[in-house]
Image 1 (spheres, one colour):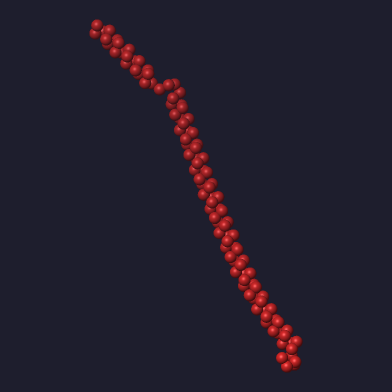
Image 2 (image 1 turned 30 degrees about the vertical axis):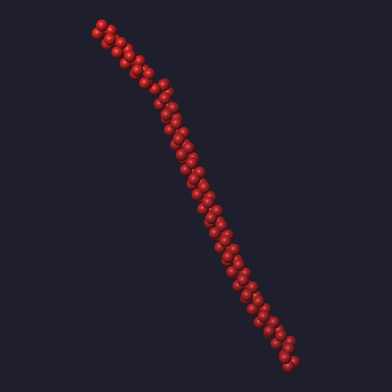
Length: 104
């Protein structure tokens, strides 16, 4: 009786071990999952970097554009001012020449 109980226990133990063993290819699947996760992570990081880069480029371009616009406005204001002043001076000169000796 003792002998058959030992055999029974041994058989049950083997059955449990076999049942607990992972399916064939399980380790390979885990490796694939890990590789896929890594690939996804890399792709995600690349996307984030690209996004950051393109956002920075857009921000820089926008900044440069605004700066250029401001500078152009400043320059055009200054240009107008100088042009108008020059024109006024010129007109005065011309007026002086035209009106010389006319008592004006």
